[in-house]
Amino acid sequence: MRVSYYSLGCKVNEYEALAITNDFINHGYELVGFDDVSDVCIINTCTVTATADAKSRKIIRQAIKKNPQAVIAVMGCFSQLHADEVKKIPGVDVMIGTTNRHLLFSIVEEVRKTKQKQFIIDDLRHHYEYEEIKISRFINKSRSFIKIEDGCDNYCSYCTIPYARGHIRSRKSADIIAEIKDVTKLGIKEIVLTGINTGAYGQDLNQYDLTDLLEEIIKNVPKLGRIRISSIEATEITPKLLKFIQEDSHHLCNHFHIPLQGGNDKILGLMNRKYQLSEYSKKIQALRSVKPLVNITTDVIVGFSGENHADFQSAYQFIEQMEFGEMHVFPYSRRPNTKAYQFPNVVDETTKKNRVHELLTLNAKKALGYRQLFVGSIQEVIIEKVIQGIAFGHTANYLEVQFPTIFSKKHDFVKVQITEAGYPVSQAIEVKNV
Image (tube, rainbow, N blue to C red):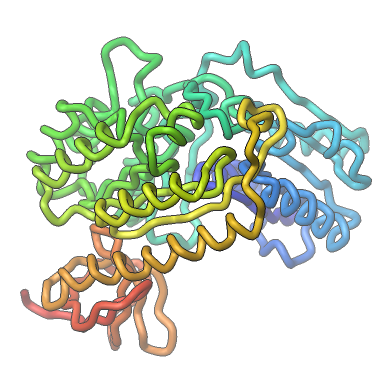
């Protein structure tokens, strides 16, 4: 029997799809590519934007067309929020939302035997326990994403994810550490802690937070390599965490992704982001005071309803001053059933597109400037791929580099000297006996 999967959206989705696929492999299935013929095809969907909705529908239909005899199993955020729409797609055999992932193998096997479709969507308002799934083997990866929590209680006015994922549910630290030990034994050299609201880990626990988890991981995992935090809100950068960052010199990557989203206080208020620019700026300054060359990356939404020309210009000026190492820019996507969907003064698509272009141009300039700081420096890189003698990988502070190599191979941990700054890829040479 053969199984394939396709995961849309965030790294949490990728982790979940991989963990579930591992369950099938452990029961004797062979993993094949999504474009290959398979007996079971799993699609993990996304609903963060209207584009994500459309792509989820497209991938589901592609899977059905390619594998008309396969059991088509749809899961994830799109099916959680748009179950009726998924049900109407002919050829979908199994549908779950963002719970019951640990049961998917059993559900699929029952459907294969009975030929009866199963559609199971839970009411997330009453879910307060983390659903344990894990990766028991790794499939040709250089870094391992480890999910530490699910859910979000922030309720930003533009976002459907709290409705698709439910309340914050933190994973037991013992289960996290056990999984990190497993993948570390398999040779994984970088662990990326991820979740729907990663920095909120522990908010539902008794006096135990992300910093406590980091300390416990470092203490209890032999031969631990790098640890990277996938994303953290400015409000979640505490004095306790800053102290840990300052004191840890070996494991924690010198890179933090801290979403900004809105570039002035008016828009942040409309977004319900729970901080003002002054607080955000102070947190960035605090990080740079303990790690002067830290790479701060961010997300920005442009064209939010009510954002006029002056609002955008003030946002541009603030972003320019922040000296981000990289910035992901998104045009605002109005989502039904969110508070912001009803907001007046909707920004037209042409204006959104122009503002995205302006910020992406600024990003290219600032990102290159940050990378120029490291020309001549020695950096450790995990090789992610080698193509015709050219290796590609990322440094601890998340600079992508390429360099010629003869003997090094995928997954190797090597030292390089950066010779030329570039964005998105800088040039380097491999260094021996440093």
